[in-house]
Amino acid sequence: MSTFNTQDGTQIYFKDWGKGKPVLFSHGWPLDADMWDSQMNFLADRGYRVIAFDRRGFGRSEQPWEGYNYDTFASDINDLIEHLDLQDVTLVGFSMGGGDVTRYISRYGSERVTRLVLLGAVTPLFIKTDDHPQGVDKSVFDGIKAGLLKDRAQFISDFATPFYGTNQGMTVSDGVMTQTLNIALMASLKGTVDCVTAFSETDFRPDMAKITVPTLVIHGSADQIVPFEATGKLAAEMIKNAELKIYEGAPHGFAVTHQDQLNDDLLAFLTVTAQR
Image (tube, rainbow, N blue to C red; front, top):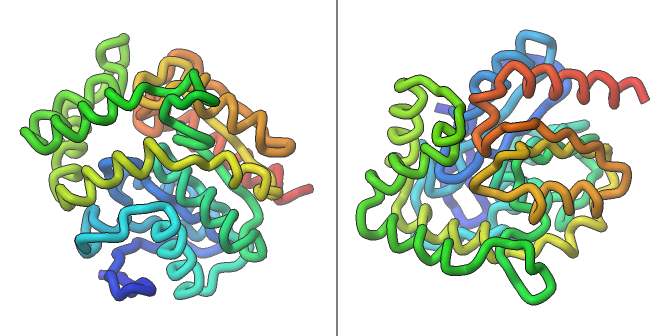
């Protein structure tokens, strides 16, 4: 397997396909790099080098007891970029992964980065606060953590329904549902729970102003997990000259339900911005 060691010695797994300009993918919770297989295969076939990693505690990466916070996640991405000596990289983050690619730019700059894509991302702030009343109430995240600790397998199985919008007319295969559960159960329970705190409570609003590269924001209008009005809408407004695409009726897991549309939009964004 392809792995690298982070600053604190954690071994992280990654996949690295194709040749060309690099596109680095950061997955959502509670998944791993395999969620990107369709996008990676599509872009690698079209002349791009595509890299995806399993976040610490998830998938095939090591499961440390600590380090489940966005400064560490950004450091891990920096270690991977330096390990592969990537230049002119496009960062793509889905859901909680949108946070770590954003924090990476905020902490390490955009010298090696030429584009950013935020897909159903938790940026700029997920949780409800006095100055962010449209956010999700803390009790929801407390309930998620309690459900995971009581019966993680059943919680994740149930979570897949709103994640893919099958309660709102979307259709995904039994295989996708099985794969989603299998991937989630490979993760550290500690990491899975700690990440709920990280992605719900981290405030990325100060990071938004530091994003100066061309940015594409895509969000589903029917996202039941990361509400558009509290996240994607605001991110697109806060990032200078960001391009916003709303997938009408799409759920949170639109990388599966709207696979072809997403693949085409990613390719178009890579192609158009390269010509500027």
